[in-house]
Length: 245
Image (cartoon, rainbow, N blue to C red; front, side, top):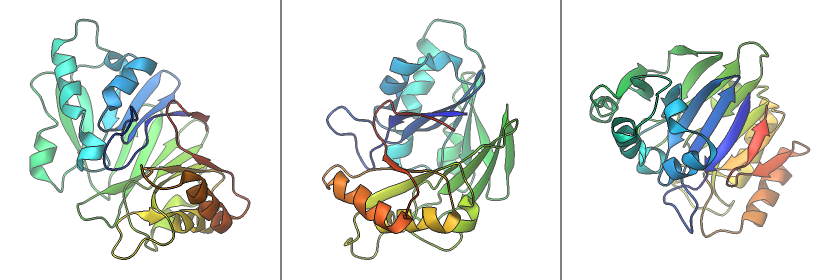
């Protein structure tokens, strides 16, 4: 299984960098996880969007779904053979209006999930945990069936106890790390020390800090996470970063 970071910022794109967008590959299966602002352009530079197998959305905040509409237009207007038609877009069903918008004519179709769902998408098995965020949002645990390798994406969330058991023993933990330690409450994203402590408590093998802030010192962010994580290897998300899991 391989992860490619196509967008890693939280909130809004900045200086040519997209918001949350990630490509997951297992063999010839390609799953796009979230599709934020600028994400479709980033995807085009790495992979033919018409060859996607599915799209998974963790929640419906704009920095995670901004380019879904233009992906739908892409599937309507772009000439070329599509690997899958209509393209399935998986989203949670707790927001009926946004969920319904995932179906667009014969081009894309909405597929629902809940906290209790287990999805079998090609060579991958997905399970979910509802997080604590101002809107319904879901962490996702993705297991590659053949190897047992595991990726966990916290999605957007504040720190709460269920995150650690959900992330337990992951080969890669992607943590929403939008704040430094001094961020006052209320906060709806993890601080750097919280991300590091989550990695340590869950005993993950690697930690990727993502959903990063535009105007904070990322060196300090990583240092704070590393202090809390101990010896667990940590990386900052960046454009076109590829991680083999």
